[in-house]
Every structure is written in structure tokens, then in C-alpha cells.
View 1: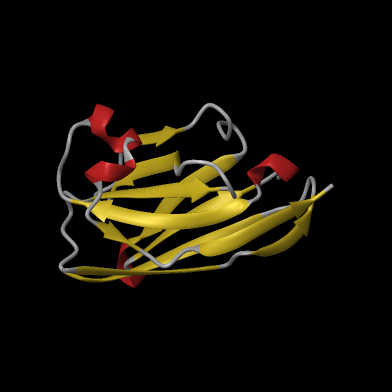
View 2: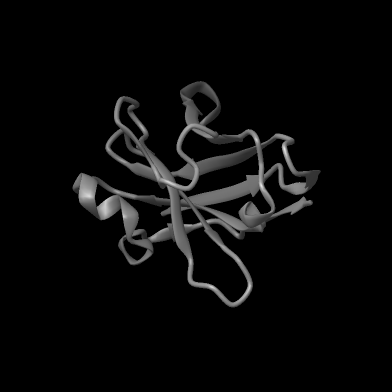
Length: 126
């Protein structure tokens, strides 16, 4: 079992920044894929970013590429999502997710992740 707890959401003006944190506990393995997804009202949950817990390869949705950065702190068992130059369309509930080793193409699909946090609200005002 893996437990995930997100924090760091809030209200920010367009152009501002937020850093989300996802604290992981339980059976965290280096082969785990850690992902960030978001879901806006009335929309499906969508991929934002992901990386392997061991580091190395990262992946971003085109809509956030160049503005968001995923990273991790092994000592704290925490994954971060640094969000810069936020836009109103970034408004959503952001979720952290984890799964064991899986192929790079599988990172995009929410259904491939077995562990989820409770979500944290991000609201960007115009």
C-alpha cells in the first residue's frame, strides 16, 4: 500500500506561482511512477506530469510544458509540482498518483494508477 497526501493548493492571480507537494508513505519503491493529474468541474481527469521515483525521465502535458516542473526529494519521500505563470485554465483539483513500474506511454492514463491522494484545489483568478 502507498499513501499519498497532497498540499500546497490555494488561490493565486494569473501569472503567479504555487508549489504542490505530495508526501508518500508505505511501500514506495524506486520503480514507482509518480504522477500529477487535475480535474476541472465538468471535465475528465487529465494528465499533467509524471516521473519515476528514481528520477530521470519526466513527462509533461503540452498545456503545462515550460511552466510546470516535477521534482522529488527522496529524503522526504515527497514529490513536488512547481507551477509558474499560472493561467485561469489551470484551475482544477490537482491529484497526486502512484503506481509500480509501467511503460512510458502508460503514464498518461489515470486508470493505470492504483494509488491516489485526496486532491488539492488550485484556483487561478484572472
